[in-house]
Image (cartoon, rainbow, N blue to C red; front, side):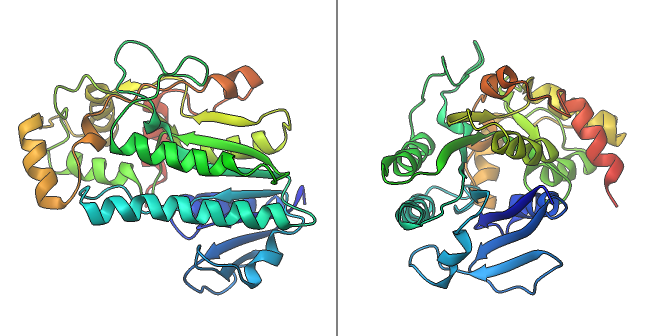
Length: 308
């Protein structure tokens, strides 16, 4: 096996599953730190933790090749005072705990990747936001990202190499945004959302997994790294690509006012749809990483071809 041990903190969700399946074939052990018990599956083992307190789980981190922290409450909700507090706490508290624990290990993970969010950048329709020239935005989502990354980078005692992986919208078969957009297309509602001019910075789930391995194998990579495909796509074009690949000739558009109404009904925020996220993975590209999926059309065709 290429690696000894990969740790996925909070890895019992969709993206954790993608990473676990990827590393199971190239690592001796994949350890998922989860609040819910689960039977071992081949070399994938679940170890209980609560993300708040120290425990027996700490010993699993010793000698790991990589720790990936995926903790965080889903932001697909209304930003009530209660939800705001939980969104922040569910990210900051586990990150602070891991900072303390990793700093005390005699043989800490060689690399610690904290999965953060590319939404930290401002609403951008003029140029792509990269790690060097990108401009930080404002508002609740950005405040969450700021606190998250400040907590991650705050502990000077940690000897592990640290990377804040600013993730775009992950496109994949089983969960996240893709199945929801596909349902809209199925029912003839897959037209543009708002004016459709907002950019969507996306990344195929397989490029997420492969890029974490790329960073692991390139010790010079440290600090903030964007994880998005090289070519962002406008909302109008994304929905058209989905309709074309699925074979749906029509898609009714959803104006902004109707999105506001619908968001209240289903308990989410229109920011998740209407904010223009135009983000570029400059550091990955400069390092020589080659994306499997550079265009959204390719990613959509691949995902739909594998659906069962």
